[in-house]
Image 1 (cartoon, rainbow, N blue to C red):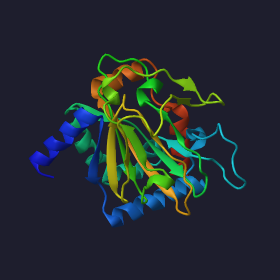
Image 2 (cartoon, rainbow, N blue to C red):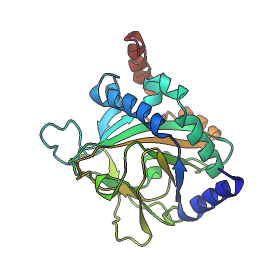
Image 3 (cartoon, rainbow, N blue to C red):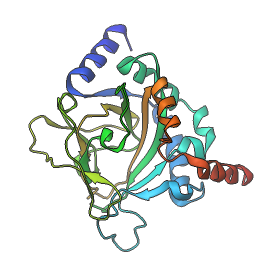
Length: 259
């Protein structure tokens, strides 16, 4: 990517609160990540209590373990992921967007199986986080499958990052949060992606995705970055996005099993 392209990417991000990043993985690299991803989904790579259902407020269909599968900290649970290219490439993008002091805060997998049909509620990531003196943050959402409207590509609201944080409330089961917004909101923009492409959004940017009503799977890998000093401050206050000792126990168990 040229210097001018990097500048344009950063300008769009600052103006809109989100931007498409372009390709981050080749087709062959996508296949490698899909293979690891599916091992997480099958349970071959144990995720312990870091696996949850972002759609748990909606009754599950028969045969579906989760409406929206979320697995926190795949890079801590399965360290070989860090030897693959996505983390370094996403870090380079994050530093272009929020500064050279950006480091990985956490990563996660979010999966929507075919015909599960449960939307990810509208929310702003910052509503989940503790208050920090430096609010710079970027989440880089990477499609491992074709991400389209009806299987759950991301929607963002342009300029919402420049407004005060909206009131959020717990979802009906109390496990996640949501806020009032819709696809009719001024500035609401869908961002379809091809496999290997990414989209980046800030911590105050309103976003959501539809449920998957198609015959296809929708796998996404999300990496979140913020200034290194803010990560240290988070950790000092006990905020580690669910890393905890249990992740290390699961990782060790995976290592013992030859992962």
